[in-house]
Length: 298
Image 1 (cartoon, one colour):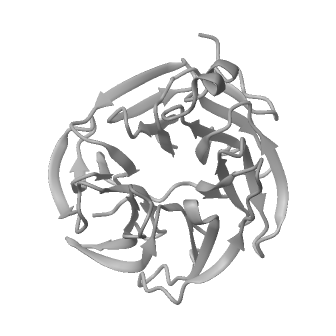
Image 2 (cartoon, one colour):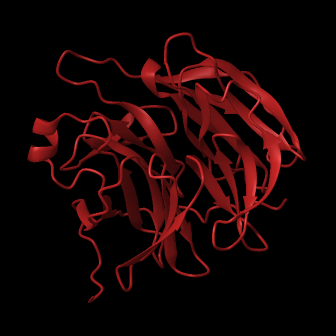
Image 3 (cartoon, rainbow, N blue to C red):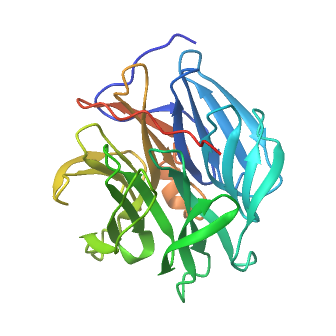
């Protein structure tokens, strides 16, 4: 397959038909993109230079992961936080899921600038709000926040001084002061509230922050990626040809390709007929680069 850079408009670069694509992560050392299909229970390795997508199956749902500084991965699965080898085989559980795994699994997560792993859960019935956001400290999970339906959108400002995350079903993005040196955090505050309408249920899902400190949020059921200024104002809107983007990440040799995962699980037949590329991996070129993703330091 001949390599071609994606255009400034979004385009599908891999017709993956993922059930619930999530957690794109650019590996700047290997020049490849890792991503997951949560419901497909798989970690993918996509090589944009060849178009080859390699699939590593897992025994349970994988919500998120980070690359390890010395190889392998740290990952949030349904049962807990696991260390994986280079082929995504389970090596060791570092911390069990403290919630009821019949209705809870780990969802969105990433490492802070010093390599600490932060991860949230999803309350699958989405009724009470039993989900949390955690920080892994050794083999202990410290609670940053609770009362959530779906912890999502975890990202850090370029200097590591602000921690962002969203509660997708509540249409809200939060922000916390954060000390990247110690890992200490401050009080949670509402940063952005999205108002749904009868025809637009777009809500903030997974996210990334660029080198200028702008927050890019994939709007699930909104068919777009929204770029927010550091003070929470909408700067730009990038439409997609599918309704359910799930997360975005910067990659490419210059970190100016925005990769976007999408979903097709649970979507009505008429929507999938209209949007056959749902579940695909999309990309668009950006004027501003992203930041190199921190790796887990164990």
